[in-house]
Length: 301
Length: 301
Image 1 (spheres, each protein chain N blue to C red):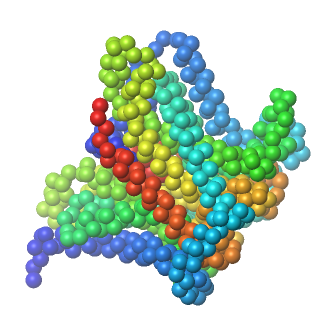
Image 2 (tube, rainbow over the protein chains, first blue to last red):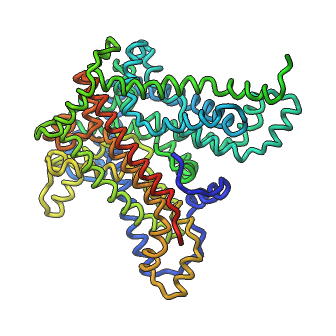
Image 3 (cartoon, rainbow over the protein chains, first blue to last red):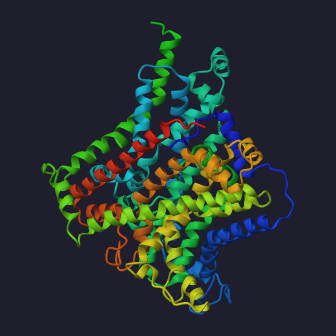
């Protein structure tokens, strides 16, 4: 969904940049009120980060240490990781999540850009109807579509065997949000550049692929990061369509793993860490792009 | 026949759109219509058909709403509780933190990242981390309460405390998103308004009520609607955090989407489940239309 700010694209980008780096106000001298601001913000930050820290620390403790109250592990060990990775299907779920997130991200990057580009740069009959028809799908919550999707999947056999990969991935291979976003971003690509390529005899696909697309790389990158995270975390639909344990994605597998581990919290926290660490890594690497992208589009992940 | 340039462009446009048009018709529009069709039938998912029952499914839901012990009644009531509890808390906290973040220069990037981290992680992993934090004796929160000499709390095991405990985690998880959107709004308010107010002798409190809040109104409406929709769709956290069975204890945490899942995919009562999703869709549509009305009103300064 688009944000409600009715400003031009350039000023939006500038604004998003400011949100990442913070306001450029003059340095203020020390004051007690500033100290209070920092104190409050630090308290809040502790509440945000401690659950993850606690998760990691628990995963490094032997079971015997869980009942004693100590924040840090006394005898840190990786045994829980070895146990979970060798006795459960976690490696397989990793692979599944990776396959699914990669396929859908590649597909979204290609098709959303292509459609966004076409809707921005071409004139053809039915253009408005198509655009509105695509945007209107944003009004329909996925929860309303899961029963029909399941019916279709059963009918086509997408809930059995390796076809389950397709079953999990098909609802998200193209997204209306991404099309909307990319259509906006192709505004920044000058038409003269495309016409010049046309005169040089480049065909239309070549113009899109080699001329226009490289100019919106940052937007495509943001789209890809969001999509990857979204698919990696997707739960409801994979839970429904994946019928065999071997085709679970990480969140679905983790959910079942929890049911089997009951109160072995060190194991459950190990599983949660395994599911979370790749994302934390992605976040640390792409932090700026992610926050900028959110500010720019108000994308709901 | 030689095609004119414009004709050729039109053909290219349709070629570029072809795959996506098929996708939106088959995977987005057709299932939406199919959902309506299923909701008026006694649908059998394995046959992919079912006899027409008219409004019987909706009537059954209506009757269940008045049965004191029905899960659907609990689900609707709880879903509204999640919204009423979660959305205001989310907005107030996020606005407060954004205002604090606007004050600081040093470390502002670090704080932004810290508040944003939970937003990129999976609901399922987050659910288990908080299950462990909320755990009866060994949980970090109860350990802390004990250390402070306070009585331990049942949290997820108590029909009174479970729903607020889960709502709090939902707020925690997407606080970072709301903060980023608020920051975008706050940075669009021209500094000179505050300077002018200062010259007129307004204090910070007055500036907040007379300048910040009115100018932030569109952002607040936008976020309120987005978050309301998110809370109306609560599922992942509830399914993985509720005790006794999904939606427990004593149905005190169940939501509409959780009942859709149970009715549709445990009891295979597809018609009834589809009818529930149609109601959910109607509610979301109504809220979105109200938002559009509110946002199209021009604000006069």
